[in-house]
Image 1: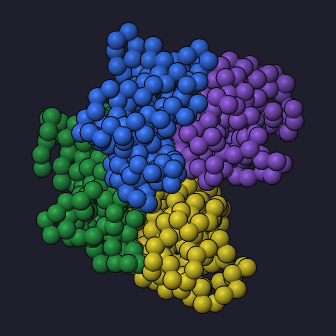
Image 2: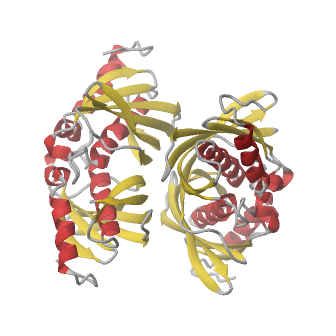
Image 3: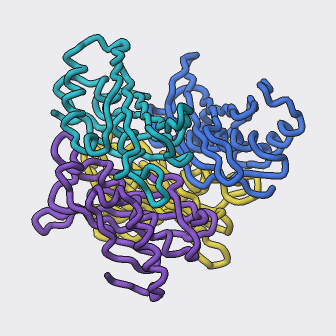
Length: 145
Length: 145
Length: 145
Length: 145
């Protein structure tokens, strides 16, 4: 794990604990592989049980890891006793989720105690080629943990 | 299953086959319980493996069934040899996904051969009480099956 | 003006004063023609100075009155000493803004002191025919007036 | 005007002609100050007639120039005989439109003959300080000119 400029191990541990408590992430095989100040990276395989009707990754998979990456990016900007919930988020799907793995990178655009504006990009890795397949833009709301 | 004004059993069967091919829906325990012209209803339990960090249904679950309900609603307006893919969709989450079951109702706002505009509502059923927990608004794109 | 179930004239007056203070609405020729609990209607001509390159109403016109209708709908659900600002809103444009007049109807989906979820529909009136040309879905944030 | 890597003066002229035909831009005082391959910059004052109720720039102003910047960015990626219309776009407003001038920068994320995915950022310039006040994410649809 890269720590970037988020030096506080307590904060990193807190975020990993929250992620581990999201059973949906385990169901999808997703892992949080990078946590830094204002940005988080989540990776997942495209499991046989996460496909749409044409055999590509389901939009719900792409959304789930994009949303989580954006949410945990927001959490890196908040005090230790807070959680975030998604108020709203929009996804534009650019290409099918084709390949072996998806990578979601969430980024804080504007932190805030009341609203935190975030974006995420999701890439598909297919035979070593990385392709942007989705972009997300949304609002996270801090709530007491 | 209620057929509404979609009388063509071939069309209904085609939509059920497409839904059955979405392994993500089986993973989430989702079922398509109603198909009518311009509207589709999908229900799912809130499985232990589909939770967020506070124990409620994950936003990815709510999104997945809302998106699928909207997409299949679009498909009811198209010829039999077409499928749809989500171009973009936005979700506003109004309340936690708390309870025993989620119900997503997708609706076609404007059909079209090039773009189909859709909305969806997602409700949580908690001890028999139905509560609106999310609204979605998006664009489906018809593609050859 | 129809009052619907919002019987408090003070509240109605407050909303009209706020609307009158939006110089953008005057520039667009927009008028607030209906205020009721949880819903507001705004109408505007398609002025010569509010067109896009093909001569139809500009997306910015459709957005402006849709956003304002949604925002003032939110304001009907709040105490007299509050204003609202748009946190985010998404518009799907269904058809060109063609005709003599636009009508925007904003509706509160979920009121709240922290976030208020709203939708709006915008119709074009062309030779007496009413056509849905846009739908909006967004979040208003109450702030002290 | 900076030309970036868009060397074809005919294409630049075509885009300026389309912009000049948008009377809404003239009403708002907006100018297209930069056209390059995949990106367009539009600037506008915050005119007295484009304010919201607190005296800041109206969300409709911010949206209008953001949407136009995104749309013309899309147009730089298309053949000369095409126009674009906005299918859908979402705006997150991060801060009030306070200051002397707004600057919108539109960018193509994924070009396409059927759908073109775009983003835009809008900045307020206040006493020489530049502040990000809005981000947009949307879909443009190419249509015959």
